[in-house]
Amino acid sequence: MPDRPAPIDEADFTEVFLHGSGPGGQKINKTSSAVQLKHIPTGMVLKVQATRSRTQNRKIARQMLAERLELLEKGKESRVAIVGETKKKRKSSAVKKSKRKYRLLAEEKAMKAGEDKAQEEGEEEEEERFEEEDLEDGQRVLEDMEMPVQESPSRGSGP
Image (cartoon, rainbow, N blue to C red; front, side):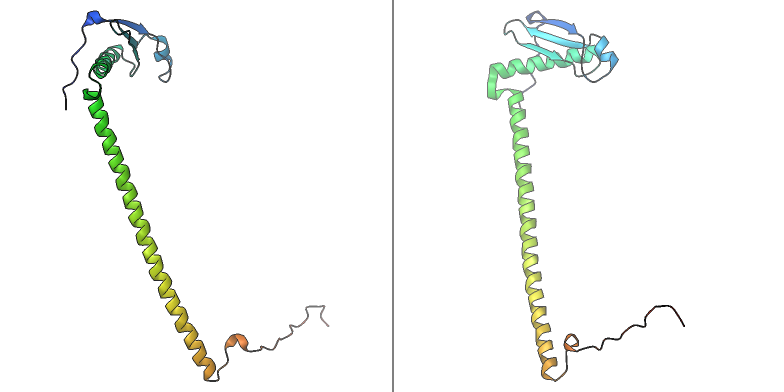
């Protein structure tokens, strides 16, 4: 992996501190902690408000400007491009691995369902065979028997 980009000469850019905006409350809105850098040779403007601290924002802004200038100069050979490419490869391999995992799980589930279905069909055939044997022996199936209906006593008024 290439080295980090070299710091930019202070004479090549202008630095302005701006009022922040967004989350962070009243402190962000009232203080000038956001940093805006303008690279004079390229005209590139960069505004950073990563933290509430002006010094941290200055440091982050300088790093980002150096990275963007390196990307502009070197293109695909810059550190930012290489790091981005490796992250992209990792992400795609993770997605492939996840798809492969769930596909295999689905196949196993389908195979297990097929085995269960075959097992259920085998049980149904056994039940039918037993019912046929019972009928052949002259026994009646409980469902075919007629049950006498009893009338319940009326709940009317007593004697």
